[in-house]
Amino acid sequence: MSEETHGILSGLKVVEFSQNAAVPQCGRLLAGMGAEVVKVEPPAGDSMRHVTKVTEAESRTYTAINSGKRGIVLDMLAGDDSRRVVDALLGWADVCLVGLKQGDLVRFGLDWEHVSAVNPRLVHMVLTAFGPLGPDAAEGGYDVLVQGLSGLGFSMNRESAGVPEPTRPAIFDFSSGMMATVGVLAALIDRQRTGKGQRVDASLLGTAVNLGVPVLTTYDRDRDRVNSVLDQLGDLRAEGADFATQRQFYETRLARGASAFALYFRHYLTRDGVLSVAAMSATLYEKFHAVTGLPSIHGLDANSAEFKAIVAEAEVLFETRTTTEWMKELRAVGFPCGRYNTPFEAVDDPQIRANDYVVELEHPVIGSYATAGMPISFSETPAGITATSPRLGEHTAQVLADVGLTASEIADLHQKGVTAPLI
Image (cartoon, rainbow, N blue to C red; front, side, top):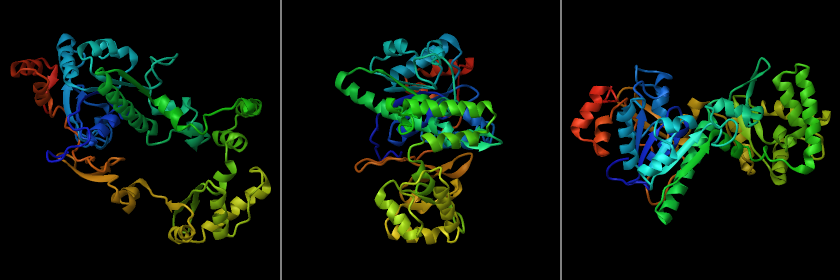
């Protein structure tokens, strides 16, 4: 963000102790709203620096996730010297973002008891894989594990050779960063009232469960039927049924709205690509049939031969015209539909560009690139991704001076290898 503009979080100071994607996404969004975000990395750098590498310390993946931050290098294992730097950062910041296993919080001086003693006004956001309580609370984990545990992978994963494949990108990582941002902002509002900070807990699993509200809500009145289907599913598994068979069996018997999803809320192959259609009301269903001329499925069982024949007829019909032709006809009657892009097509889609959901940046090493912008905007204050990611150790000396260390202290830390300048 330029010096001439002030985002809605201008003046807010954030320190981020995390790697990978979830917590860095939170820091990225806070920076996009004007906060000053300092990212703390180990001497080897965030692990994302080593995915899709361009140079030894720069990668496309890291660059995309960490736009708009300042970066320092700190060896968190360097004992009292590193603790001194951590405490200085905690005392300087308004918000601390942490993505560590529960057992490492005390080890690195980032547990709530210590953090709140150093800075009682600090908002301390800790994001874990599975939540702060329960039998798996101390375990580390990644998005793919939560896809499995949450039950959502069963619905959304692709299948290959009879086995589910993880969904990419890691949607629970990035959506958890958004949930964490909500928690941070709520805690800041509370601090305005009370003058006190607090710990905010977020997790990949908690986010996944909330994203799955429609399918992870159960009713006692349905329990007997659900248990019967699950017993039959267990029999299929025991017989060696592949994943596609298991999912089809489950969804045709338990998935709510199975008929609608099979016909009105899906993607169709067209003559030149793919078309997305979406309807969830009787009025829209009627419009769909008016345009396509297909028979109504009202009252038909989703497993019946008649229902399946209508779905098959629809699939053949949509392949007779181009995506653009179908969009024109369906939108003329107010039926929701749209293009089905590849990721590279989406980057240049006029609708995405018109809202600055994708922006252009210039990295000093990698060069120019297009990346995701801010998902929200404000009428009175700017928000946007306007600066690229920091190079490894780029702002170490500058940040250490900002948090109160003297030039001789900074030089001593560099000499000991506790911290490092631009590498």
